[in-house]
Length: 330
Ligand code: A3P
Image (cartoon, rainbow, N blue to C red):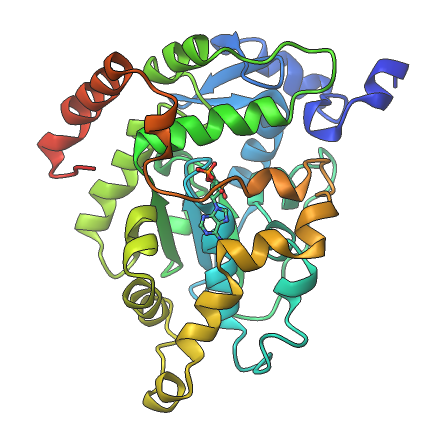
């Protein structure tokens, strides 16, 4: 490893990618990255170099079980929040005293619900043994629908998809990538990033194709895929949380509702609570991202504080053109 590589956070390093994989990646269409040096187009979507090895490995090796639950998002759509909700729902019997000893008080949601391609399957020589994880197993991914491991579709494994208004998702991504830039590197300008995003060149983008893949499938297979929206989670949290609980097979009982368990979970997972925890103010993921980078303002419509009227018009027009004909509007 070179000295420069040693100082680089892991999320920017590419030394763990095998030469074989690098050679294959070199054959793919390539664009300049937002954070890591490059993005590569695979199965119609853009991925960072480090992630692609994991994508291939989990496509090859991940065996979904009927009881699995897979959280899927396009980056910056509220993944951290949804991970917290789903983890809290599934584990509420185990940790009834939510504000005393709950893992979400001491661990970041991304550590509790790791990504398939970025965490479990990231190592070139190691296929993880996931058989010891108790059922239902909870995983997450940013993979587009077309790239999901086949076993996900060939089993009754459930998919929880979360999307967000593209304007807010874009601004969130722009802030996030700039926050993770190392000292001495130039920030991404809003204009350049905007152009890339509109052209579909963003992490796991095109954003609209990602959303559309899951939207269409959720209409065809509503028992398998639930399509959720960040904005709905903000506006009607208890309704959406209860719907999610039913979908993943752990509905709230009347007693739980009377005892205030729904509100407790919402409070535990709220932006205010999670972002103020010591672990999320100070900690880092094993891949080097600071936990606090995942908590910015957590509001609907913050993008209007950054985008010009023309930019808003342009993004709205793309969204309308790509999604409206499929009955999807933001
Ligand atoms: P903003 O940058 O708009 O604030 P992801 O988790 O997919 O990376 O998305 C991050 C976005 O979700 C950020 O949006 C972040 O602030 C917001 N977020 C994180 N935790 C949240 C929570 N508990 N409630 C609401 N929003 C949250």
